[in-house]
Length: 467
Image (cartoon, rainbow, N blue to C red; front, side, top):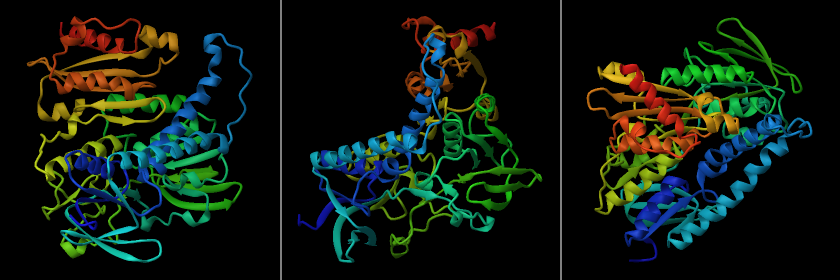
């Protein structure tokens, strides 16, 4: 095979492209990734998953410092967190992740091509480097894993040019810490940033055009998170959209008017109105791939486009747009294209983690979905303020909800709000995916005291309700 020919070329440098290339290499294939930037990691490492979770951890740490008297400690009063302090941990983690990613590519013999990747035909990709030099590479298969970018609605006259309005990718260019912040959009990203800023002392207004925040979640979880956010000082405005952004000054920020006639003053604004696939100038038209109106690429259950040798995965195909799922999809794609197919995982078998404060994690269908399907189901709930370990640690906010099939006894879904939710969901995921019964939690011994005890309490609650 010539130096310019590969078995797989992945366009993109994020989790999906990385895992696909590594998996292909492990199968004895020659793989390359094309990254337009001089660093690897994509949006996940540089302005999405890693930095936002680093900010969450800093915000959590700051919140816990203020709660140190919970443990009888007389710590000095914490001062207002500065923007530099908030961003410090994120910058150090990003640097480390870049190094780790680069090393993984080298160890797995994956070629990294730096430049802009563009599809010429189903088996050729052109790479244009920073000097404008072009080179064409041949390949058996192409993977489009170019990620997504924040959606900026063009018909709403949002004044991004004023320098005080950000989208989630541009947030890290923030010049000073706001005292008041409007977050427009109460989806995953908007809700995460709303809680991160609220817990470091920023007054947050959270707006959403739907009738509840995080509307795709189980209603009990959405309602409980609403209550928790309000207790943290976040003002939630549902069924609300911004009809006018009036700038007052660089210092005072904006006067926002809603469709209900409300007027709210804030220093800065974060727009979180969904994301669009990064598909521009990829040469899709040359091979007949047509993205949808969200610029997302349509694929089949094996992540193939309408061109069998061209696959797509990760954020560029839309839901669920999670780094964890992108990694799975990338590895799956490499196995499929080289004749090692696995069984596709249904969307409800993906765990979803939302890094709010406290966190939210779910696996399986919501109660509302089970009602629509006509499933005879049971429900068990446990509040963390009844869990001994939570009382010891102070992590008493939140709940754990279990849904199970009354006929088969199978656990169908688990939904959690807790500071440890994204870790706690792993047990629920195992039980759901292994099709274990609700009695698994009541008939087995768990370490005590642990946060895992919430599963046992919720299962006991579910069985008690059946009597």
